[in-house]
Image 1 (cartoon, rainbow, N blue to C red):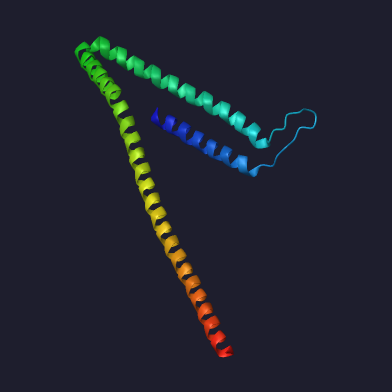
Image 2: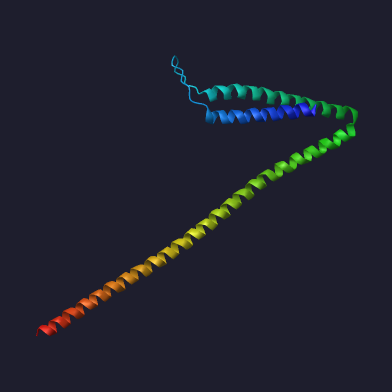
Length: 163
């Protein structure tokens, strides 16, 4: 029973691994007679995909049927236990309905906090850049004023020498 399922699962994993490598390794083939251009990998993937789909659906159908048989057998043979299991399942569903929006809201809140933090960092970088730019402009202005002062002093001294 279990070894057959393990064998099927390992086989399907191996086939899906080979199919994924076929997409990368096989060359592109064009059919000259029709407008459809398929790669060899696409043909193989389609065949493997249909095979895997049928295998998975058969496995799911088998597991669902087994699960339903167990539920009905429990309902008939152990009604008290079945009632308790149903109560637990309904309680779990109620909790899930209650917690799902809360978890979604918490995720949104987390994202908003991250955005707020990123905006704060961006504003700090902007302020630092503005301060650095102002310092640079002040240094340039000081340098220009110094150059003007030197030029004026040179004009005044050269004018006195000429007299």
